[in-house]
View 1 (cartoon, helix red, strand yellow):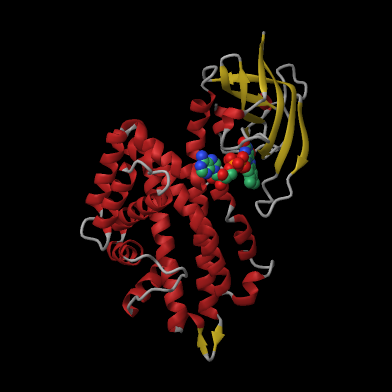
View 2: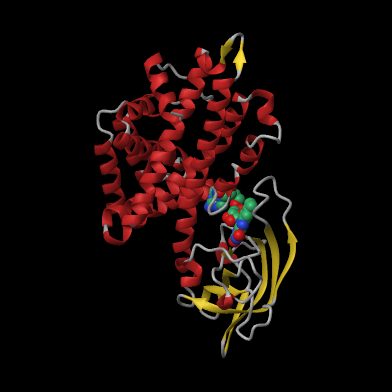
Length: 386
Ligand SMILES: Cc1cc2nc3c(=O)[nH]c(=O)nc-3n(C[C@H](O)[C@H](O)[C@H](O)COP(=O)(O)OP(=O)(O)OC[C@H]3O[C@@H](n4cnc5c(N)ncnc54)[C@H](O)[C@@H]3O)c2cc1C
């Protein structure tokens, strides 16, 4: 653990026990299923000193890692394993990287296809409880996806604001044109809500070990927040890019790269529908705890435009026999409600504007399709880039 938990990066290709820091990747997805990892066919055979793993993974990112958490079928079922790059005798482990994926974006994180040819591994957790074991890490990576998407949007906003402050069009800075101000203010509101929401989620992660309410918040809202924040990022970054005009589309700036990066956080670690189904699962397994979370959100947003209706809608949708059919509608509302509550803790006026434009009325398809008064626009922009 000390070698894993250290912050120092040691890029050398050496056995982990000789290194000052190590990195870990994970191998779950196979050709026949990423969501459905129960269909994994990679096999694990117990040997005297651990296990030998044989099989293929269709996606295994960060192949430079010193070890991987891998799912494979052992005698008692799907099990989680720790597979290091070097076997205990110091020989290079039988992990054969076959190809790197040619991806839309996310290019500085290589993603590989890989064959394990009797690769040495140690078991993590019980045999047959692989999903329950690895899900603890997956919860964290889902949180990380939401943080990263909020960060990408924040960066896009900063670039858009900076450009608008310095670019003159028709003898006036873009930042002083009323229509551009509305676009930027609406984007700033979106970012502020997203950041407040992911930080609220981080607080739940921190407090979960000692606080049952926070554990329930984390369980119910991690998939909802991952769903909403990550899926909002691509259209947001497109709008940020457009604020820079033609230069936004050119590779010399960062926005083209941000735009290519944006979709991946929604796709991996549980795609959109899978996140919605996970919210439903949390509701059916821990109904009382989930209801308490919803009641807390209702209390935290009481009096804000559209909040009561949204709470009622979410509660009713999840009680419906056909809840899966309307899950996207309900999960989006749940995330918006949670974002309003998180924003209300730190910026009540902004929370009111957010509720007004996202809960009370369905937001227009484009950023800036809102009716804010000029004081609110000024305040939103001043908060976004002081
Ligand atoms: C850049 C990149 C890097 C990756 N790195 C790794 C890695 O390091 N390790 C690893 O293990 N995996 C990795 N993956 C794989 C990724 O986690 C999977 O692609 C993802 O989990 C989706 O699985 P899938 O591709 O099999 O899609 P599928 O499971 O076939 O899903 C396809 C679509 O169906 C939807 N869907 C699934 N089930 C249902 C349902 N019951 N009802 C309704 N809709 C449903 C999903 O939401 C999705 O939109 C990576 C992927 C990418 C793009």
